[in-house]
Length: 130
Image (cartoon, rainbow, N blue to C red; front, side):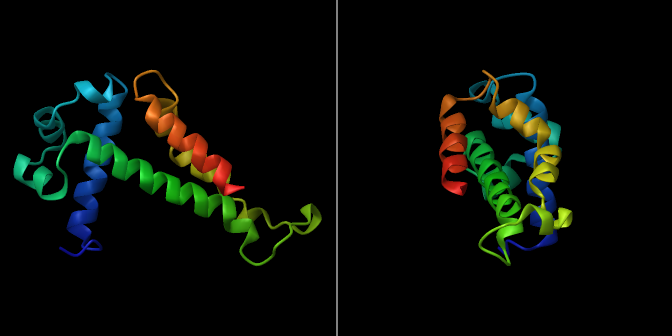
């Protein structure tokens, strides 16, 4: 399987979006594969081709967002070690765009509906980014 295959990317994006919508309504442990597949309009075989359980979807999506967060935070530092605010190019400040793009995810991750494990993973990552 080619991870850059457009069909795979679109399928996973659809699964991530569906999981995000379900997480607005119920905690992660209550979400079943059958329900996720039905709402994502995919068959169980497709799901199990990519994942073993619903938690794997969440973990993958979480890691994808954290990678984007890291890249967004570090963007202004790509060409310099120290930033002088007078010379800062606003186009390189992507962190706010990142938060806006994943706003729903952050609302969920910081809610009581998701295991504290992911909150602590986010916290550790934020400390490491600096």
